[in-house]
Length: 408
Image 1 (cartoon, one colour):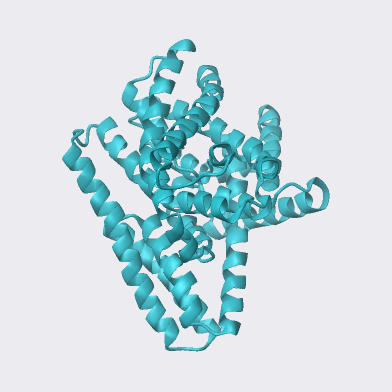
Image 2: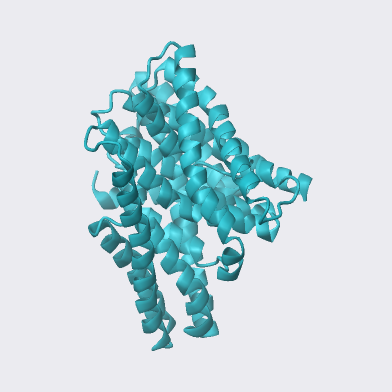
């Protein structure tokens, strides 16, 4: 299908499902759209033996989800999220956020991988430990897109919201680096060595932060020289697209570069380089873009079920993995909180909210779908990822607000 036609179909369906959800179902927009898409997918699967498929399966099969999200959408979604995060709040919680996004992700990767390795034997599967670690790496990062959308309506206390938001904005960048490192080892492209891992981390993460600061500062200087909201919105678009493309070309972390640039523009740029009129238009533009891309992304997650190759044993392991992922997140966060307790105070219930509020979303699905065919258990890992992500978005996403109200 021609690219324009594919985009037209996806946006039309997103708009239709958004309308149906708003008028009749009344769930949070992204969850409602995803669930309608899933129901439609199941309907199409049931009708397929009768030859009644209007071409949606073919359309979804032709979309490279990994490229669409990781290269096409992610930079816009991260920038829109970072634009509204207060730097002072972030700095106030910098130790917790840094700890959760680094040590937390790595610890969660190994806890998940190890538990899945042993759980696989219970359902009659023999998985290599490195492949279990690969699953741990792709499922450990919490998804900023899913998290930010839910937190807006959940009414979390400011400090807790900053911790969850800050972690989710940074840990997908860290998570992608961990995933790529383990993937290189799994495919035999690299030997496991502390030096190699440290070099990759330093290049991707530190390089991404520096690039984000440099490109963000250049954009800030441009913004400070004009007072025309059309030009200024265009400058932010150039920052996001150009900055992300440059990061990919230099093999640096694009997500981290864009988050840093977004924080700089959202704080310093908003305060010193924009008029009230520009601020209003900029916020409206990025909010609309964010909502539109979110709708399309969750529509795609709902439709991905059409192209899954499902094996019963991996489906069962996926349901077991739901609990494993929650245990791993709880354990890694509990360890971090114990280590940070002498320096930081945490309210009662923070651990349970942080655990349950760590939603998995499109990033995990994109990483799973990016696995090469040379990984023999690729389809199984994709199935497991999908089960965990759907549970996370639906069950955790719909109940996190109630959990927050219960504790606060």
